[in-house]
Image (cartoon, rainbow, N blue to C red):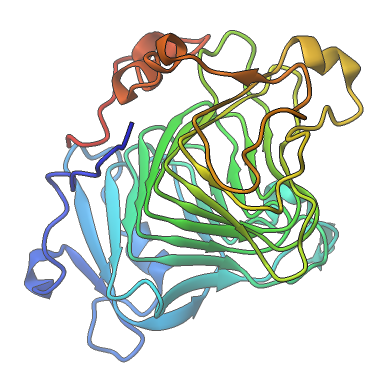
Length: 323
């Protein structure tokens, strides 16, 4: 069931900055010193891809990629040294307004066709409640070799679009992967920093898929030993772990109903051939599932990202490996 990432045709070598449309650098050697300034000059509603190279640096900015700025690729010089960060959080007062989870983001992706590679996305507010590092509303969004750093609510897939993550690192405390999109996580590391919940899907009723994790590794900070795979933010939540390594921090029951007994009849929480100390299934909640070989055959990228996979069909199928 191993999924391999094929670099999209539009992503080119980062060794030659002449290949990029825009260079971002804090040392004055680029076109712009901030990521937001670079995104602002992307042509509106362009069918052509805009390639942006970001040189090493910590960029403290609250960034929005507007819906009209379609088909943007950002590539960092080095994932450990290209950090896009901000420190907003729910309850913070900014200009007389009180921020909420939905406005606490560090980077908000509204546009379709976005991709990122070798970037660290961070919310540096600390353990102060909901504080989103990345919020995705667009469709057909790709992250490769990226890091998502935060605490509660780190990665928020707000919309009803489709996302693909490959070889990424995501950390957090409570519900640090949450939302309503159809998302595939391939070969990612999920690091729990608190005894809490990893996922909180809010999959719309009628969607065929929600969160699907292939070949991922679930790890935890020292002393963390009581973590649930997920709980339903909305009662039709769908989350599936396929051939993942589950550490001993995963609770034997695996899943939680968020004190919503009605969700036990409507959620779809499942696993397939997972391994590791946290993968034992004999004490899983009875309303979760273990997929069969026949069941798991439905979990291909073609089917997960098909136009009819959503209750409100997409305009067309999507293959994240093709421009």
